[in-house]
Image (cartoon, rainbow, N blue to C red; front, side, top):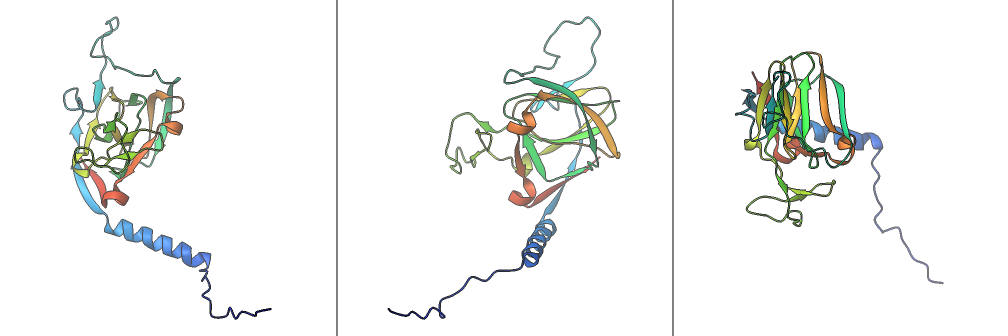
Amino acid sequence: MLALNLSYLPTCTRFPSRRLSSFASSRAQMEVASAREVKLKAIEATPESFAPFGQVISSSPDGDEFGPHDAQLDLSRGIPRFYIMRIEDRKLKFSTITHHASVTQCLGSIGGEDWYLGVSKASILEDETESGTPQGGKTVKKSACGHHYSPPKPDDVCVFRVSGPKFLKLNKGTWHAGPLFQTKAMDFYNLELSNTNVVDHTTHNFRKEDGVVFIIED
């Protein structure tokens, strides 16, 4: 039988989990340190200023008939869910932004306190395209939810301030970050679908993809 000397063959070096954890932590710290802060001045949300992203709905007299001033909703793809959500520690800073492709969404604060929302126009692509293929100069990605979209650009992001007893209706696909606020915690009413946050939640990470973190100035 032929005897083989295997002592010269290279072996895999296994790093202790502590070293791997330390490396991951150092990398995350480097990403944070290298992120560029972009300051955005908050714009007051009005029906005119917010029109590219959705609607601003204020109170109307009792008995008014339905019209274009009311929230134009699309809840046709599932079971509507209307609930109150409590949010804590959402300071005026963000680096991720999300869209829902299958539903309009309504958000409003309980009590009418001021709050803020970062937004960018919807960029869902109806025609199926291979991921990564430029379409009209835009990068194309496929969401885990199944649809294609073009990632939002940092220059296209703006921030709105919502003051008083009103709520926002977001168009389908509108990118949004928030609600954000200056107090410790706030309660918001939210209208979407029962499974929106499970099956219809696409997120873009500006810190990771663009090296940017947004700071809201009021």
